[in-house]
Image 1 (tube, rainbow, N blue to C red):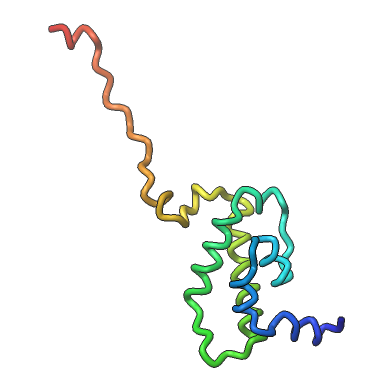
Image 2 (cartoon, rainbow, N blue to C red; image 1 turned 90 degrees about the vertical axis):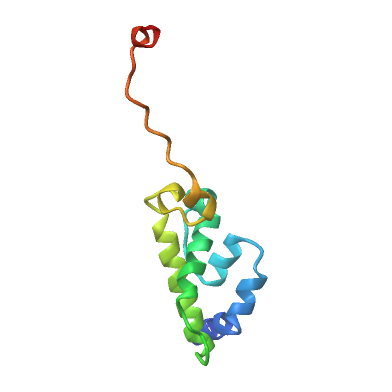
Length: 117
């Protein structure tokens, strides 16, 4: 396939193809984004959630599909890079992690003798 043909195949209604994808690997393959399996195994949902957060900032109305495909690819690459060097817990993209309580600090030490008085 030539570069122009690859671009045309990638951009042919890319949002529909992304929605129809059944795995993170499919999305990475569709957008031609490389990845390390160990990163994807740990943070696949977090990466895709971050990608969707980045795409939510975009307005695709009237934008040619090849530009949409390029923006989707950039959002996926950016989302993936967020988790290459840091953990999902550090980014907290999901509500359950955002709401998770930080372990409580231990109260000041009170000697047992004081309690008996």
